[in-house]
Length: 136
Image (cartoon, rainbow, N blue to C red):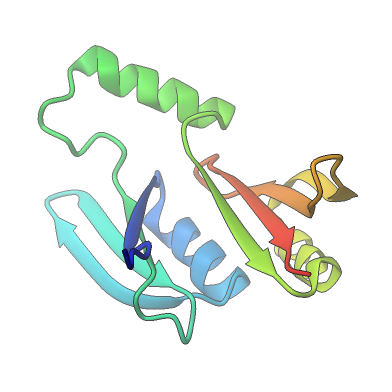
């Protein structure tokens, strides 16, 4: 079986702040930017990896959601416990410094974890937890 990750979705609350984080801070390329009414879907991905994308989406765009669902999603996003993404880099210290210097909220400095990885963590502008593992 040959399976890859093609798209994953993360909610965003501010498209311009999300662009600044994913494009300008992390260096991802913008692959698509689609608006509909007051909503915007932005597809970004790592340069040189055209088959892997992150779609930054309005958190409450699903028409099947109730108002209570939308409130719950908004509250979970504000706490940073709604969505997460793990990235990888060969130079964790340099990546950590660059992301921290962008003003991103640091959740965890580079740390050797007892389960065998060295990683750090940030929150993106919408509160999503972004962990970055060091590739060894």
